[in-house]
Image (cartoon, rainbow, N blue to C red):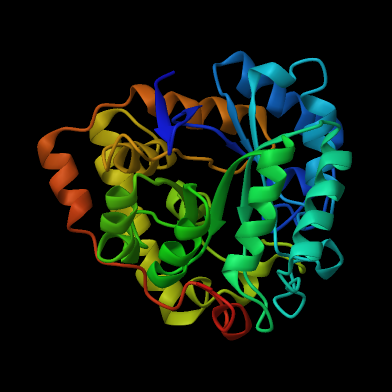
Length: 327
């Protein structure tokens, strides 16, 4: 497995997103801790050193499951988690933490307990409440760095202005934001800034919330509590247009001897040596499939065709989540 640097933090360039271990979004609330632990162990055995989780996933279940899975193997893995969202929210956008120093520190202490560790390798500040500032939030994380409880600071879904303000307080190692074959907004304003400041990028939803993996054709088969049912990109005419993009990814991948998921991930890996992927799954076969993308070589013509694909149809979040994005 090849490695990359996220602002000085060494990680495998394909990691594991642990959101599905909490039964969130893609599994309709169904929990299977044993299956999730097996998936984490398989990822570690295959050379993954980067596990991404958050207290809000579950809530709490994902961090607890990751903590159980890495017990006895803590020194083999970079663990990333998030401050700035209240775990009681169930990922409801109305439950953003204040982002104040006390809130940030309390978030981290809870995460440390659930993960069963005394330090977090990379802690992202997710979003800042309206009555505080990113400077206060990052300042609190900087104090935790000094105490040894956090080793690197990141931001999640921040805009360019917020990134500069945060980086002025303490070095930001990585930004986690949506970036994939069909969501390429980051290429115009965010990526150039990250490279100017030597900040790594961790793309969220690298498989388009599963659609680019080629396994979803209708939302009818999704669980009632699956958030994609309300995702604009999975509804009506938007879904039809986006499936056309997914079909083209499948066709190009077939030429390269790759699955659709591997094709989408392999394309992202060509975007720079400061990008680390954390596709989410709790299933061992998907872990193995995703990691195999590390060895996929896309030809120049295939890359050009992927580059020319149209962007996704529809907003990337529903209205409630868009209202609090990028801050």
